[in-house]
Image: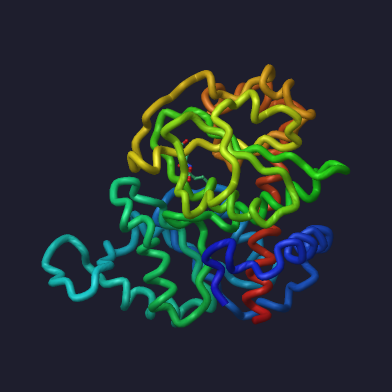
Length: 313
Ligand code: SN0
């Protein structure tokens, strides 16, 4: 069993309930992963993903080994049939098979390039590992999705849900850098499987991949979208159509106390890391409505439920 996208979850509410139970007794299955090794390969930076996935593995009795592949591995060739006389030292075919001999599970973080849309949409690195590895593969944020984050988001929303059917808003916010679409994509795919009124809001030009958004409503007026919301999930992303470009940094889209006042005392969520007073004002992030720290804590239980399912498969 692989965990490459939200589509690999067969029963979302079942997994969420199981994760909440695991959170109460995290060491219950500490024999399940005994003498098993998980390799965490990072082509990009990480704080929460790196520590929570290791923590989840340790809770299950697994031994994590971590490699910063981006800076310490050989530069990997991804194309088939290439004459490798340029900068790339090793083909991903050998790398994936070799790592599979050392590890019982391989987890990979490889962000979008944001320069080559076609290659990014193919999730080149993740799919090559899934193809050539002989052990299960876990996505720790690919060029297309971040399903461990979205599962943690589902756990956090379940723990904080109102008595009524919730209104959930995914809001774009400004950012100085071009950021990937992965977090937003997986959040949308997860929300499309929830009992909720779900709305996406962003400035014109920031439309996400229509194959992900499908028939989810998009409201271009942020304040209108915020009315009666129970959860405000904030994330910046770069343009998808004008691929990887920052087309506006409109400060009016920052999440402020005034905007949160339009909601139904909504909980504020963000995957972190977050740029204070660019994406969200201090007054919101430091308020009781912000649940970002618990959201980050749930990354452990999201990873733990995924690893448990893999070990049991
Ligand atoms: C990443 C992203 O996909 O948006 C990882 C989020 C879990 N975020 C960033 O790269 C933020 C970098 C920054 O400088 O703010």
